[in-house]
Image (cartoon, rainbow, N blue to C red; front, side, top):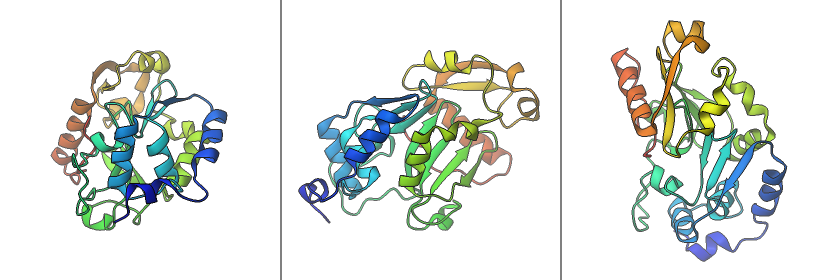
Length: 235
């Protein structure tokens, strides 16, 4: 176990470079960190400020990309990494996110997560330390074959928007910008249905609590015979 000072006071911290990348990134809003919550999260994660995960946690309250289409969690606000991942209230060296660390949600109920030490045992693709994505249009986890630093760089480059080809409709930006911080967009017929795949623009959509959106996806995955996606984050 490393003490908080050991995690923060490091040579070559990642924050200066990350801050510049954030300043240069298109369509990114940086949320303010809560110092107490940020330090709590960093201590439980046991990562240093030399890493992009540590820098993001310590210096930001998270990121909103494309008017909130994608919400990356950091060290502050009601949806901090600690709260979304149900960190213990006080540091517990024996605790770890068993199924993987939830990093971000998108408004459709998609989930980006960092694999834990044994993803295969949890039914997750990829190797330990890689980022995976729970796709709301297939109800399955997909490996992105990159670690956290490369994943964050991909997001800040703006190239990630093509990732959602076929999952955006005319007016999506306005609908997204109108959401509350804990809401997502429910699509009917459901995103995984044949009708939605054929004509997404013809679907009906409404804001719903993100907790509800994630719960429905998990339930339907099991109902159609797919593996239980496991923990998708607490919001």
